Image 1 (cartoon, rainbow, N blue to C red):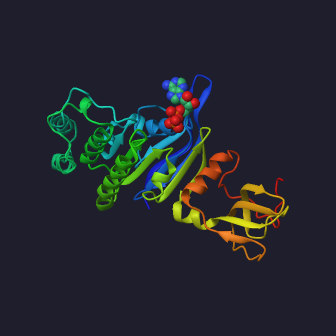
Image 2: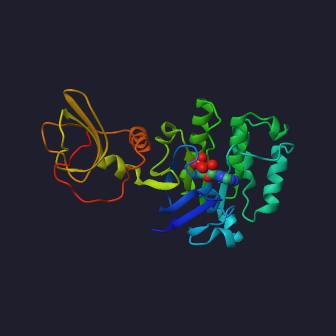
Image 3: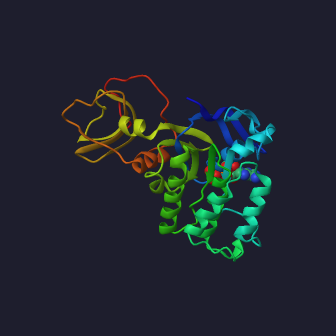
Length: 299
Ligand code: ADP
């Protein structure tokens, strides 16, 4: 399978502070991936390194097998929607479409104008006068008109109301489903991503904390509820989070086999529960580890 984005030991530093550090990840083509993490985790930095707006201070980044910072030709294959969709505010949609046509060899003007007409985006108004949701749709249409192999979106829905967010994500899914475009979409609004993403990358404190296919991650993580205990049952590879009352222990765990101990009730997790548990425990990660039998709990 081809690789859309691959980083090895990737790092970027501002002065003495690492914005991204030791970042090693691989995103296969054809995936719609969520890039999740709290503010300041390094999401924008990673996306800017991927489109060549920044150069690495350590390690390497490859996009579709090429090096972004030294290969401007790559930009024809990569669409990028930056945070808050900044565009020339005095331009109208037709102005932007004309500019796109001039700058891009494989520009699909009809794709962009057709989408924006269907969404009833006014063509006679300057984009600076459009709503946040409308501007986000314009930015997405312009990025899609390049017919990119990889589409990178940096918090495109953060400033939109819930309805506009849903419309935007639906439009995105519809647009990429036909072409098989690979998407990497950053957000700290995890609930929004649950419906649209099949791959997850969690960045925390400038490092990769969790990475994998959503189906695999959801299959191997479980919530266990049982009588108050000091050890986790067989089948648990790692305890991500534990909480206790006088009588009950609740564990959010990564498993490496079935939990057969009848003392524990086993429940599936939503993607949001899984992500929030990891974000609350910066030291936890999905890296493979030893297989403890009857693992000790922290409290
Ligand atoms: P995110 O997109 O996850 O919110 P960023 O990639 O924007 O995170 O930022 C990662 C870290 O790098 C933060 O600590 C941020 O303050 C720092 N940072 C980002 N851009 C700059 C900059 N131009 N100068 C100095 N520090 C920066």
